[in-house]
Image (tube, rainbow, N blue to C red; front, side):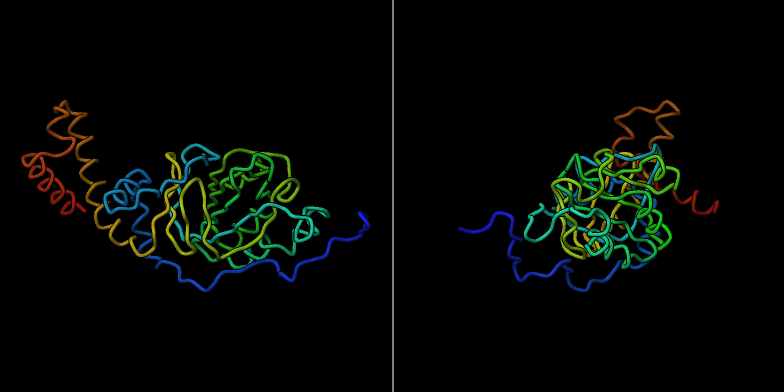
Length: 263
């Protein structure tokens, strides 16, 4: 009979897991996408056949926050005592994917974290968030909780999460397992290097190869909606300006030309 107090036999499996190399989107594309809302990006992707781009669940930590950046990914997995558990707190975590992914952050990155909507795992806290900002990170999207929320809010770092908790990352049922790998967040797939557009409506994942097409169609959409808002505020009929009719489209084109000339 085996001794129940004996250590678990450990499988021949090394942690953390790291995915393969990937390329980030070019900085000009990210800069141009800053004018595109998550709602417009989501709608344009839907028209192109990508129907699951919205990260359902995470909400903004602060009112008015917005970010556009390149996805760098972190995957939590369920704990299993023979492989990974949270005993030892941060002294264990410093050797996990959570610490490793932060060393890979580049300016303009958005950290996207798969945490299964856990209500108990505080995937990011104040100290790690500060280091993330120092490395040039611009936002965090986590399908789960954060801790030290007041201090993170003071940092001015845009964060989308499902809530807050006092727990540290591996205190309960999850463990930081892998980085630079595909992750599932709020029902959406995010690949390393995809574009994240997040604002008050929530985060949207734009496949990197489709970012240029989204930008091309969304820029015109954002412009004509701005024109339509102006005309509706002036008393115009909704059916004439949302969406544009052939006549109001012609009026919009003249308005847009005048705006460009004024610049």
